[in-house]
Each structure stands twice: as C-alpha cells, then as structure tokens.
Length: 194
Picture 1 (cartoon, rainbow, N blue to C red):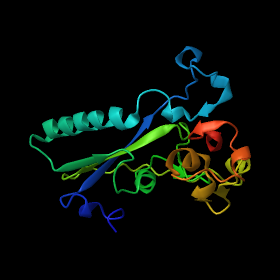
Picture 2 (cartoon, one colour):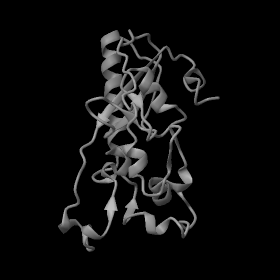
Picture 3 (spheres, rainbow, N blue to C red):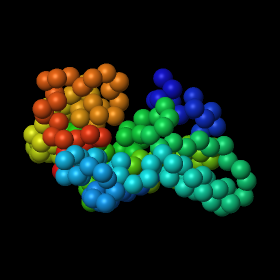
Picture 4 (cartoon, one colour):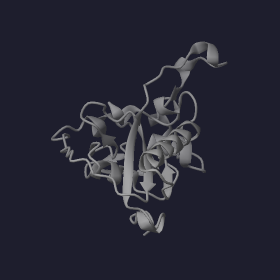
C-alpha cells in the first residue's frame, strides 16, 4: 500500500528524515475562556496554535537547508500527521523511541509529548545507528488509567472507545455508555501519557 511504500509517494525517495518535535503540557489560562476551564479538559497538544500550521514551514526550511548543503534542489515531500505515511513505525525504525502499550511512540527521556514529522528526500543520508528497546516491560499504567478501556493488552487501541477519537474524529453522537467515563474531556485526551 501507499502508506507502507514511500516510493509510491515520492518515487525518488532515498531517505526519510524523521523528527520528534516536542510540545509542553500546557494549562488553560482562565482569562482565555468564557467558561470555567476547570469544568472541561483539552489535550495538551491542542492548546496553542495548530501544529498543522506551525510545523510544515519549519520542515520546508529544513529542506532548504539540506538543499543548500548539497548544492542543488532535492525531490521532497513532508508531513506531520497529514499524509499517507506510517509515522510511528518510521519513527521507531529511526530510533526515536518504541511504540508503547498505549500505541504512542515513547522516547526514554522525552516520553510521548511530541509531534512526529517526516521529510521524504531524494538524496541518501547516512542513517543513525540508534536502537531504542521497548521499556514498557510489565507496566500497565496506561491500560489501567484509560477510563474507557480503549487500550487493549495486545498493544492495540479500540478507537471506538478512545476519548481522543470520540471528541475529535467521531462524526456521530458519542455512545451513551461512554459519556460518563469521559471525565470532562472535550477535545482529545492525555490520560494514557502518564
């Protein structure tokens, strides 16, 4: 499929630069809202400016820098949660972390509070030698913490139960049996990033 074969996206692709761009867990500023922010919760990544608007210009600058270094234009495509690409798998292969039981990419020091971005390049880059092993072990904190039981024991996610899916992607009404479990989350969820 297109998602698994970058050459179907960029036929000249010889390298993929994978980036983890950190975001800080934010708190809501009470003066920004007409409602009391203690009455609802928003995922940290969604506070502030939209990363879909912020990151692509930075990726473009990075491509321009690489082109300056090699002395000529390079075929390229870049994405941040916007294209047909297996971001977590590429990031794991690039040595940025492991895919945790919560299905998020986890870096041993940075956790999972970062956006992933990829630049497909028509030039060969020397790959990093970094190998990060799975550090989840017997820990099940993310599974236990999920109030809707969306995180399954086999490192899978039942999106139909995930608060992020329910508050962002679902186009229908949230199922009545899940509403009391959502803990005032109105956009996304950070619970499994404990």
